[in-house]
Amino acid sequence: IVIWSVATNQVVSEYRLPDARFRCVDFSQDDLLVAGGDSDGNIVVWDVVTGHQLAYFQAHTGEVNTLAFSPQGYLLATGGVDAQVRMWDMAESAPFGRPLEHGDSVYSVRFDSSGTLLFTCSFDQKVGVWRLDRQELIDAYHDDEAVLALDISRDDAKVVLVTSGAVKVLKNS
Image 1 (tube, helix red, strand yellow):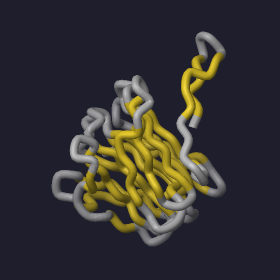
Image 2: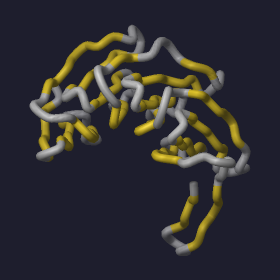
Image 3: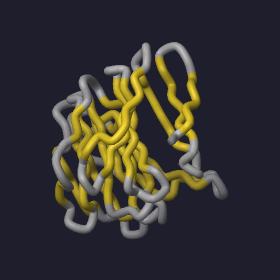
């Protein structure tokens, strides 16, 4: 993982693990942490200021496709080819709650702006909306195609999806 400064056009820092093939990366909202997920199912979290590795999780069976920090930075959500969404407590460097299940590979995870809801999408043609305090699915959208990516507008009013054949914008109710 390489952190590059747009202002100076230079590499600021690099994070490496032997034999790791990283597939996804995310900064915490305060830019103090960076997390990477690899093709062997591992998650690594580094302190951006010191460069120290803070956490290492064997998160998934197979590739980690996606990860995202909560807006407050206390949770990290991950999704993989094992059809699971896992969450990690950054203060405890430990799993948080139980795995959330999809029917196929999970391609994207995103928190709403409050950090209380998690949106997930999967090759199973579903978008899930999960309430994190109860770890339950509270809403779902079913598409005609695999949902390969999603993002949420800053005001939480819309969700944009990428399917194998289209880009779709949904209104978040």
